[in-house]
Image (cartoon, rainbow, N blue to C red; front, side, top):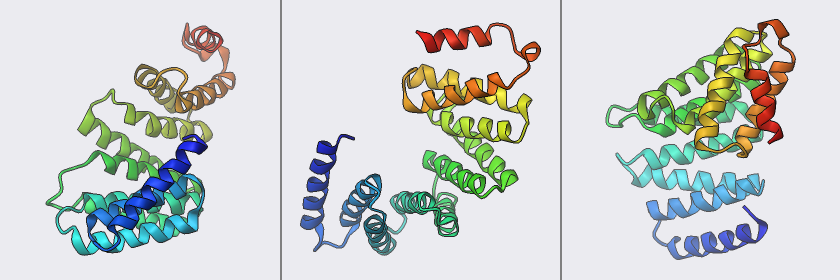
Length: 229
């Protein structure tokens, strides 16, 4: 988001918040969450945390069975804590979100896959690799179950799992996840998307470390033709 657009968005969110402050209902919580998300993008983490927490307090009071909005706000707060490397708080907050998604009255929701992926990132960053692997796998499984095996939401957990296997020296396991992440991502997001560029760079590093005789025919030349085009 360009700086001018960020400033304009902040004005709009702040105005909406001011109009709703006397309501103290789920619409106020939505305005608080929107402004908090913007502050998080600007790395104004203290302000973002305060607004997320206010939104959560309101949502806990008013939402009742409509708890998916609360789960989303918890997920946003958990990601904020992860970015700040407050891993214990992040994990606890993400688990609260997962527990909402798992409640009997809730149907399985695609946002749950994102929370599971984020729990994998926390374990990965804390070097608890077996737990990270499980969360990435759960994220992939939930997305495939809800959205199919070729959905763009799969790219991030597929990449995370591939990169984890690469760092653990599990090369045979890493490569198919890299290839699948690239195939899905390039089809749905395009070759110049920032995430696809990141996946491609990691896959290039993977290929340069791989013995020549073990590479599948055609992968190496095709990969670099794509980069040079």
